[in-house]
Length: 419
Figure 1: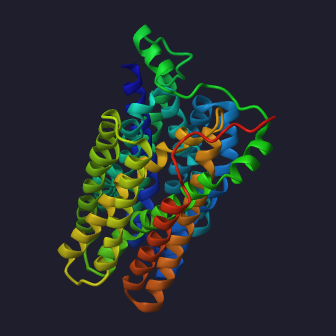
Figure 2: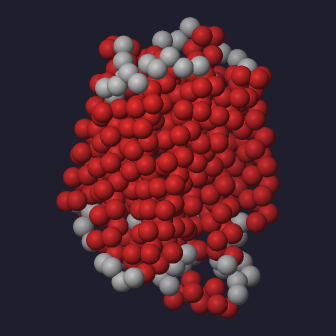
């Protein structure tokens, strides 16, 4: 059962990772007041993490396939801890932006590495729940992290949130350094070793052909683009909520920082539950009962994206309770589609290229972490409300659904290229 301990370790890492990402979202009001920022300027600052995070996805994928999960995450953990503390120590918006850019570089390997490690450590029939462990952690971070960071900021000022998350990052780095190993380095029971060997777990190792040829080959695959564009549409709404939900509640619903923190937690709790129960447990259970793998994953994937369209009615209410219910429906649906998306690289990638497929998908997805905060900020600045911004997110989701339906095709392994 060592694999489930590894799965939990990866999930805790993503949880801490998202504390580091969302602390700026919670601190945006005092920062705006301190530096006299308008909504458009705040949108640019909120997107700074995404500039480097997205830019480093492709090289990170190649490094993962070459260097491996363990060492890339160790190095990244050191740098992201430094970047989080740096945000609390520096003064001036230029240096704060620089800190966020450094954080994006350091955290770039986390999700592709989690996907690759899950492919190593879990057989295909357990891949859904294993993937949802780390994907749900991204949602659950907002359930406990947003109120905790809001409390820290209320108690110690906006820098307190960064000190708090920096300390947690260091503690996790120590735990990861001690406990994470690839399966070939770990002491597995004979039963678990046999389960991984016979259950379709990916083998540790680098693909033949070189990084450039493998990347070019994967970029020619329709499956890769169907997955990538569909997941990017999910990412647009995800990053809109991740960066702007506290601001939406404060600006449009006139809440305090602490109250918006608690209201933000509700939809993310729903997202955590649906991620684990539907995107993880239910998908694995249906597949174990003999249902077609492609039909199960694509059906649940598309249903989740359709529920995400609840972002549109959320835009047209002035009642905060009604708005939060619609947002909870949208996030709940998007949440259970996400682990399915993250499980697909380890199912379709040729041997030794899971990291590269995951990084292609996450590169385009995280362009949305730049686009969504900036577009939302400028739309809110121009219109004075979030209505049009939420409608734009709905349109992007429709395009993503079409990509999943018509481009992804059967979820099976892409043939290895001939060297």
